Length: 151
Image 1 (tube, rainbow, N blue to C red):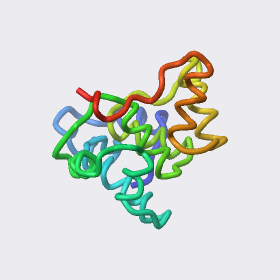
Image 2 (cartoon, rainbow, N blue to C red; image 1 turned 180 degrees about the horizontal axis):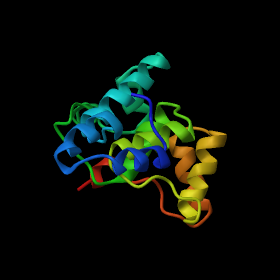
Image 3 (tube, rainbow, N blue to C red; image 1 turned 135 degrees about the vertical axis):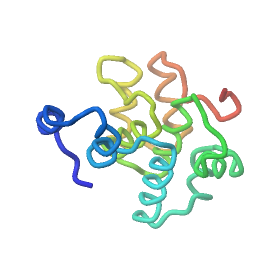
């Protein structure tokens, strides 16, 4: 599906009837289901020729928990867990923002200091998750939460 911009969607909506809402969504709105996240992230792993096991190891996430997240069996409300996975998979900032969106979590926002620093970190890739957490702490910010604290 080719993604349409908001203006194009608004034009389509002008001639869309309530009864056609479901088909409008199917044809025009990006699927933000958990399946969409899993499909997206697995395609990134495949593109980068990286295994889920290696990503979970680099992200410092228990393998079993990671597999449950990607299968949809488990859900997390901790954005840091998704950020850990994205960073460990060497995803770009753009890919990370897309992954957060697909997981129905807020994207990193440049006006929030911690998010701004994380955006820089995703662009510069200074090292592993341990180094990322050191940088966050050096700037007086909370480290990326480990998976043991998810709710």
